[in-house]
Image 1: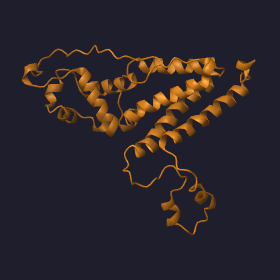
Image 2: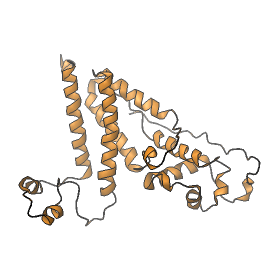
Image 3: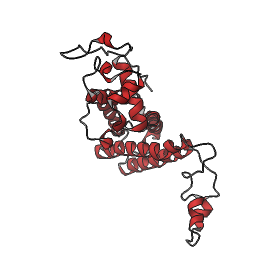
Image 4: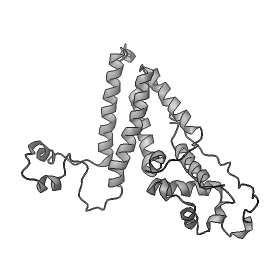
Length: 251
């Protein structure tokens, strides 16, 4: 996996007419700091929570201090999205070991989404025109090329890119978000198909298989995510079989 080093080119914007003097606020800020804090707020609470007043409060400053560095809230949103996308590494795929490449793509995406679980929901929280920068273009093109190179049709590759985002985002929001925030003695509502509390609440419903499933070993979130990857690997292998490329590496 290639290392994705961030370089900061952020500079304070020039003060325009009516803009407060920079020395009017005794706070050390930069676009980089604002972008990171904005991502932390949006990642934990969603973009609706990312207001200029809330952001300023995180720095113990007033909103006018922020305007020495950003023009408006829209720019703050764009900075947060761009920073979120920049933490996704550009994976160096090896087509001779495509299963490893799929695993790396899934795990890297999970790590990014898990750190800022709501940051990818910019189109859900509110209707904004977001300019996320070129990083997403590079990420999508690279993984599309990988899927095509291992023998999939472009339509199949597109479907798998969509599946990657749905699989990981759904898992992070439904499973990781719960596991990462629950207390040590909290009941497990995730690893079983139907929690025992739900089964006991409706004893009149016959659920022999669901009750038998409760006796299986409990799984943590990493083990549950491995199931997601394994299911996707099986789907990819089947697509390659249909396309007549599966097994050619050993020939």
